[in-house]
Image (cartoon, rainbow, N blue to C red; front, side, top):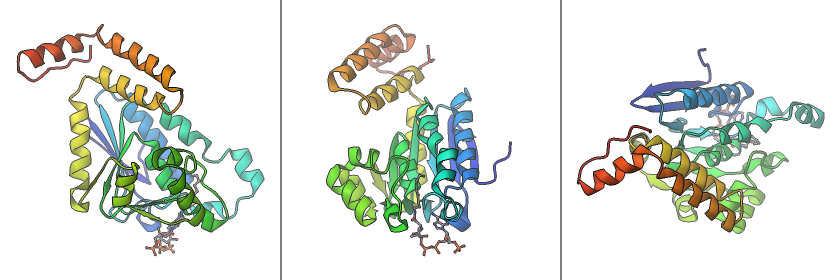
Length: 258
Ligand code: HXC
């Protein structure tokens, strides 16, 4: 199916999904959210794809949920529709890594969407925020929960209560983003990171993603046990033999996902 609010390209084992509502700062309309979730699931199911990059435009990753669509809704509407409830669950079910490449505004649902990805690479133009408070509402898909875990209570409170925007440099310092690069280099950096991931054994990539994500869901001792079991299970793979042999033979590993 052709998408209208996003663009998808698959090249060299990387699926690049670009949000594409330039007239609305990539606001997350219901159509865009539906298309995005479908594209992520298709990329996850596509054997050729080994990593996913999610990006917006130079001006905006996404300026939040579509306010024009939400303005007319009442409690019963959003409660019955369970508005945005699918987003976290369906993104959490994606097994392949998703890198958010953020330039410009990542606000409200846009910031939350970036945080739902596995890590964020930001342009120096990026601005993160949870300005829902200015609209008389609060964040709805992780802006009070993930943000507090990523940047700590004080900054999460500051952003959620005042609605202030956090610039890229502060976002890196605070642990919200993994790297900040000049805006012109953003896509090269994000695609380069995706390529690096694509070269690894997919078994260990999926296991590493699952293990890190588990750290947000469980106690340290349970998480360590989970990690150790996965670590032990890697020794049942051919890729473990190949990776370690290649190191000892001083050559590049040729992983076969076996
Ligand atoms: C709908 C939006 C929009 C949004 C921008 N636009 N953000 N439309 N929903 N979230 C539209 C504007 O109405 C305008 O359309 C066009 O995009 C360009 O925006 P401008 O405001 O003219 O641009 P600028 O002055 O550069 O300001 C950019 C901005 C500002 C700082 C990003 O647009 C802004 O503050 N946007 C709203 C951010 C926000 O409050 N986000 C949280 C949403 S609630 P026209 O037609 O006038 O040209 C939310 C809840 C999440 O996300 C809960 C779960 C998902």
